[in-house]
Amino acid sequence: MADTDIGAESDDPLVREHRIKQQAAQEQRRDAVVRIVRQTVTFVVFLGLLAGLYSGYKAFGQSIDDAQHDWPVVGSVLPRTDDLNMPPVGKIFGQFGETPGGRDRIYVHILFDEAIFTLREAFAGFMVGLVIGMVIALALAQWRRLEQGLLPYVIASQTIPLIAIAPIIVIWGRKNFDVFPWEWQDWMSVSIIATYLTFFPVAVNGLRGLQSPRPENQELMESYAASWSQTLWRLRLPASLPYLFAALKIAATASIVGAIVGEISAGVEGGLGRRILREAFNYTTGPDRLFASVLGAAVLGIFVFLVVTAVERLVVGNQPQESTT
Image (cartoon, rainbow, N blue to C red; front, side):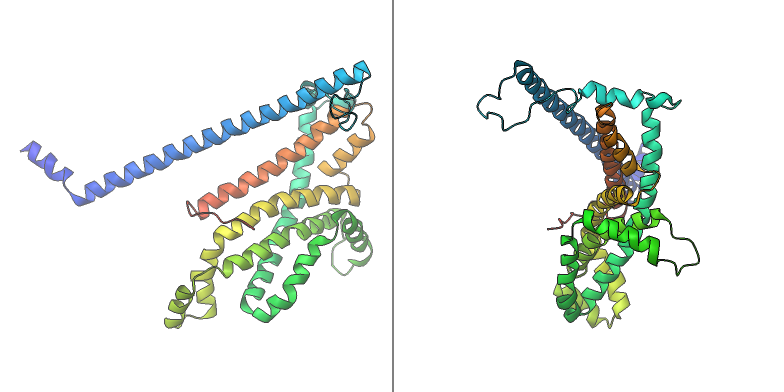
C-alpha cells in the first residue's frame, strides 16, 4: 500500500512539475558557477599573459639598451626600455602595499578613496546621461523627421575632442552657472563631462532598440487599439533592453573616462584623475606609482562594467545580446 502511495505521488503532475523546476534551478545555478569560474580563470590567464609580454618586452629592451645596440631587424623603431619608462611588474604591484611620502596609509587605500570620489562623479554623469540619452531616443523614435534632422548632430557631437571641450565646460561652470540656489562646484563640471560621453551610446542604441520590434508585432498592438504609452511599455521598451544594456556597458566605462579627464581639467582636489596627474609630475622619482594609479583606473572601469553586466543578467536574463554596431 505504501509503495502504491509513493508511486501515485511520483506520478502526480504537480509533484513532477515541481521536481522539474528544481532540477532546472539547480542546472541554472551550476551553469552560473561554471560560467563565473571560467570567466575568472580566463581573466587571470589573460592578465598573466599581459604581464609576461610586458616583462619580456622590458627585459629584451633593457638588454639592448645596456649593450648600446639598436634593436635587431627593426633597428631603432621600437623604443628601448629601462626601469624608468617601464618599471618591473613586481614593483608596480608592490606599490599598492607601500606607504608613499611617509603617510600612515598604504597606497591601495589612497587609490580606493580616490576611486570612490571618481565613481561618485561618474555615477552622477552616468545617470544624467542615461536620462538625456533615453529622452533623445524616445523623441527620435516617435518623430521620423526629427530623427533625420537631429541624429546627424548627435553623432557630430562626439567628434569634438574631449580634451578640448573639458576646459570649456569647467570655465562655463565657474562663470555662468550662477542661476541655481546652490554654489556651483567643480565636481559638477566633471559630471557634465561624464554626461557628455554617456548620453551618445544610450541615445543611438536606445533608438535602435525602440525601432527593433517587428512590423507584425506593432500591427498587433494597433489591432488592440493600444495607446502610444501602452505600446512603449509593453512592446518597445522590453524589445530595446538588450540594445540598451549593450549601450550602458559602454556608457558606464565612458563615464569613468570622462570623470578622470574632467578631474584633470577642473583641478578638483580628489579623484583618480588628479592622482594620475600628481604621479605624472613626480614620475622621475616614482614611475611605479603612476603605473599603479593607471592600473587602479582600469580596475574601476572593469568594476562598473561588471556591475552593469550583473544588472543586465537580472533584468534581461538569458535573452540574446545585441551589439552596438
